[in-house]
Image 1: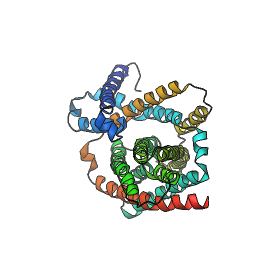
Image 2 (image 1 turned 45 degrees about the horizontal axis):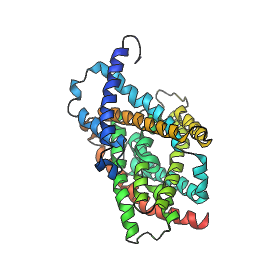
Image 3 (image 1 turned 60 degrees about the vertical axis):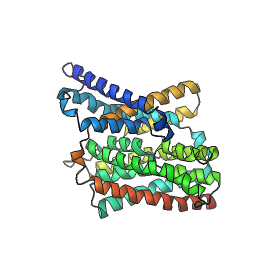
Length: 341
């Protein structure tokens, strides 16, 4: 046990070390360069963690690993639960049925496409294909971390998936405003907001892309993006069922229930009641960002570049295919939903 009397000092030392690394990442993310490109502390954290993992990690006492593992598992779940304070049911209602259906179709078809191409065509392992697909379909790094809590896969697979969705999500953040200004996307502000929110990976990237066009676009984009985030709950429940039914070891069929996902939706419901002052919610969101940064930093510290061999290239190709699908397929899905729903 991580906090047994024997292991407690080592676990706390590991936690403190991750905390300090995350504090550095959080501070760096406030610099003009990172804020200008909407690069979140989560991304900075995993990069710093990976740099450390491939340079100085061998000097870290082995006993401290329990603290790092605690961050990648327990703190991760706490961060996902608190993520519910970023969502209200009123926000979802404001974009109408078109935004809701666009989110459902994009998430569902992206996951199915990612599984088929990843596992059946590229011959990726199930975990890497699903993690990459979930990150592309729902909410980037946070979705990858949440899915890891259900799959219980090796950390390096999550790091590979995070790396791919961060790369293509960042490209999307700059590409979408450019092709909109060039007139290649003939959409009004509301529809463009739905399109951006339904297809770009990270919340921060959605904000960056929408704001580069118009504030109305940014507002609608964030709301639709939050709908995609909420779809993380049923996706994790279905994924938990699949893991228990078809992928369990030694014939075990026990249902894997991601309770943190259930608590996530409960927190979102509580947040919809507006019982807490806005300033308190903002502080909770700030705390949550730091908790998730610790989880990402710890994930990076668990990732050696040697583990990428044989899987990184295929995962990158899968993410590229899904990126193109989101741009093209997402456009037609958005047009269909806004015209007929």
